[in-house]
Amino acid sequence: MAIPEFLTDTVKDYATQATGAYSAPIDTSKFAQQVAPQDQAQTTAYNMATQGVGSYSPYLQAAQTAQAQGAGALGNAATAVGGLGALQTAGSNIASGAAGMTGANAYQPFMSPYQTDVINATLTEYDKSRLGGQQAIRDAAVGSGNFGGGREGAMMGQYNADSLVNRAALQNQMLQQGFGQAQNAAQQNFANQGNLFNMQGNLFNQQNQQNLANQGLAGAYGNQMNQQFGLSDFGRTGMGQDINALGSLGALAQGQQQAELNAARANEQTAAYEPYGRLSQYGNMLTGLAGGMQGQQYQQDQASDPYASALGGLTGIAGLYGQIYGNKR
Image (spheres, rainbow, N blue to C red):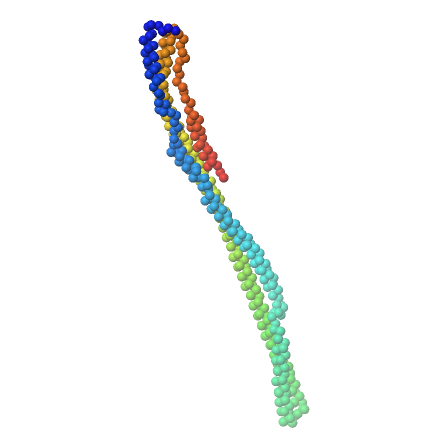
């Protein structure tokens, strides 16, 4: 198609401008896509999350130690309970034995097995000692001429009667002495059994007190174990909340920075392609004036932002951290 004469100079001007515009390379580095760096709050949240992995271990170890100590205390309590049974049995045996040491015949087991021999020997010696007295009466009767007479017989009878009385008194005295000694020994043994029973009772009470102390200690260790678990949960929950807050604030700040970078990039790109758009409109206008069909209107390419979805995903990191560290055990 021939160019109208009145457009010749204009077309030449357009060609000159187009040649200059299209021959000059575009510095695309000015509007290259950029991703905002991670915000300091996000960095802090990430570091807290990584450092917090396994942070419950010291509390778990402390809880395990308390659990082992509590089990030991319970074992000691069980041993003490077994000892209580043995002490109770021993005390019952002592009480049963002491019950048999009362009554009218309680002295008998304590009578000396040699008492009869001692009494017999003593009485024999006594009888021998009385023979001399009988001889003295006879000799006196002979000297007085009354030997075999009634006076001698009366004196001998009285003497023998006195001997029997004294002999019986001596025997009774020795029997009473033996009985008294046996009775005292029985009473002392009964008292000893009572003291032994009291000692067993004291041991039982002491053992029972130790048993209660061990049970209380086991309960204290159990409470300590639960407290350690609670501290672990509290620490992880608090850390999760901090990470969640820092992650959310960091994502917000990063999103703002990314928006600023995108705006600057779009401005640079618009400025770089502005001549092409202007020349496109200029060329279409000339084509219309020349009576031809106008070409397609130039449109600047809108480069997609592949990081936009990634940036949006960053806002979910804080929630992910919260789920990791906010959940209970």
